[in-house]
Length: 300
Image 1 (cartoon, rainbow, N blue to C red):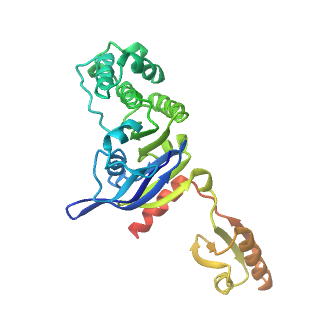
Image 2: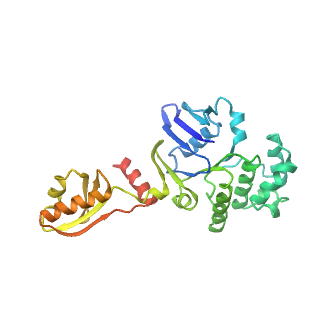
Image 3: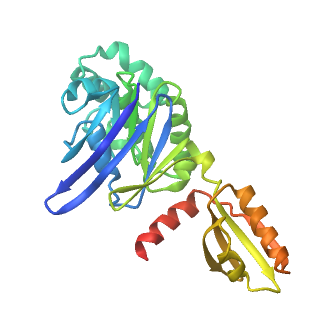
């Protein structure tokens, strides 16, 4: 069962919070929605869950529009908002039973599995107001999984948690991902690296990166160091070189074909020019480098 955002936009007057965003998420994926505060993450989350109507575009599950039938969407989607609207005077047990009844479910059937999954057995009789931030987040996840959703959407699930609570939440998310497709919104890159298969990076409401994390380390860029010739002139004459930039005594070269062909072409040209080659190597990157680069681009 696929979840799709199709040319999704949301405007508030003249302000564009989400600008023509499209992506699809396949069953079983754990996808991180990453961006600075204000990048549009929460707005997209609300539109995916049919709690907020888009100004343009659609959210579709296996082809049907969730806005056209939001109740059906809510049966398939579990949602943990960044600020969970709980009733602090209720106990954990009473709150989860209340949410179950709102969904038309039998509390006796659905609350115990959710409690076990979130390790809340010892807190059932505690008023929510007395719980730590970490346990309140667990309550939030428990209410989101009562109906065994096919999609689980979590907005900043580790925000405000201490390291121990964060580790527990990461473990919980990985366990939940065995049964549901998980979409995790955060501005903390470590959370995406810890639990996600794929990253969607937003910048000022636009989707600027959509990559599997395993593919992020692969680039078409090379670091070239050589002496004895005008390296810039040699690189300029090569069809394999798409662009180049100076970088601390070296050249960062974006190649137009494969990295292997780019290395061979550049090495041959430098040798022919009589250069003393010091380095021709692929540039390795990670999520932090990608995130920094795409946000530096807008600053420039």
